[in-house]
Image (cartoon, rainbow, N blue to C red; front, side, top):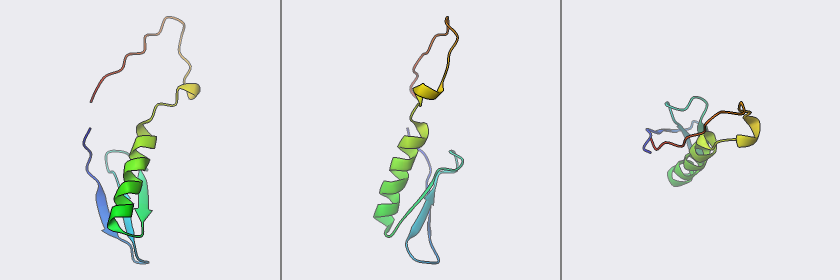
Length: 67
């Protein structure tokens, strides 16, 4: 999966990164590389299914698809 990441220098120093396609998916870092590594982790956590929070009806099918 490929996503656009917006990387901006912060006024206080460092960088802020966000993913427009994933509302609220924002991270930051002291360097450009650190901000990119942090946003990658934030994306992975954002899209990670939280199966414990999901309740399905007894006859529900769960199907995995690649995007």
